[in-house]
Length: 303
Length: 272
Image 1: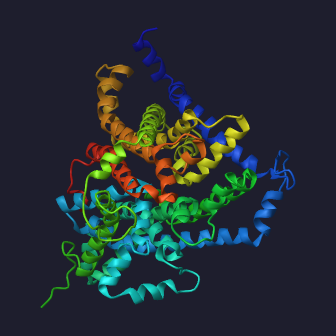
Image 2: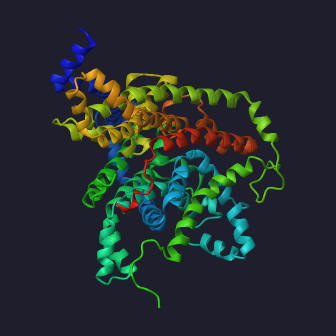
Image 3: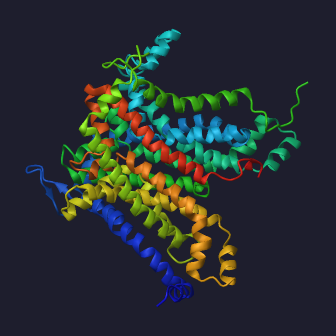
């Protein structure tokens, strides 16, 4: 069969053509990815024998029971969820002026400068950025140095004495961890937000101004509601990335565990894969709940 | 008197300060790391550095463990990118235009590896390896990376395919080209830059990946794993700084290339 005949054959039978294209990726995703997800789910229904520390391969809910009944485990989930929400809100607030400026005001070279300026830190090595913050937040680090020069050391000390979120230094407090999370996921919020703001038609702004709205009113009543899908799309990233991260809480921050760290420690040193698996089902469930909320705000149209 | 008309060309001072301060916030940490790679001081994080030197680059280049990790990471990234280019392009071509039942679930499946946090992919692969009694190796690292790299290639190629007017393919066929000729002369030239950009991004992503890799690497040490271990053993701080700069360079070159390959032709399309 010649190539031409073969291509005609497939052009006339679109389903055969589709099958030809889809079989390799489906085989890969079906076995490697979905297969692994099912393996994870299966592991979470096993439990560890308390005396032998061996995994008992019999379906049981014991591991989930352990997850929801032990207060320490519930604390971990609540702590992680609280951090994810706080980080998402902070990212949205900081991203708003940047996204508005780059999407609605900057032109030509300035616009390109802003887009590259947001993309470069987003793609800069994850670990290098975490490492950088370790240096910045250290007791003798740059933040302390700058605040010292400005005579604002008292402000930092007061923040660090705050109950619950403070600590001996920025690099070992929840405040420091919060700053690092916000820094890391900020570009993921800015880009979809800017994309949504780019799509706001100029005629709407003119109409709003013609009807006598001040710039601030136009922004609040016209631009912002139209940016909501972009914010929702960005928040999916900031929320999901915070929920699953285990590197940042183990490099910067207070001793309290986060979901990701718990998964990492349980599968590693503790050797309790069932509990690690059960813990990793928590962010999956939370993210699916979050996605269904974000979908109502049009997040998927803005991705 | 100040005009109250809404003029989109004039951002308020507050907005401008917020935008530039935000941009500065995103860049200062990286610039600081680059500065620290040249510092003469080797034990504390204190700022400002007392002097500048290139000495630590010599020290880092003489370390065999760094070279081993670097070559391993490059090899993993190359293999993962190759697999991702094939799988990502195939799925993009399949899902770009066709309509068939289950298409939405397939689309969701292909973006799941980046919608869910990396730790889920990592622990899942580990759980599967335990079931299959597979030992961690070079190949398990590549398998993990190829999965999320495929999504990157898929996203780039499908975005380009969707922008392509369907009439082009019809015109090509009307003019007597067969399927392979249409692919060769119409589709591929259009998709080529998106394909390359997807590959570049996939390479950069794989080279830098740690979250999934830790679960699938076993005793293998990619450069990010080497770096991660250094974070808890800060005895070679100056060398760590130098490796940070190397990592930044290796990832940013493909990223910038990808940006120039896919940037829109018209940079003034705000007014649409």
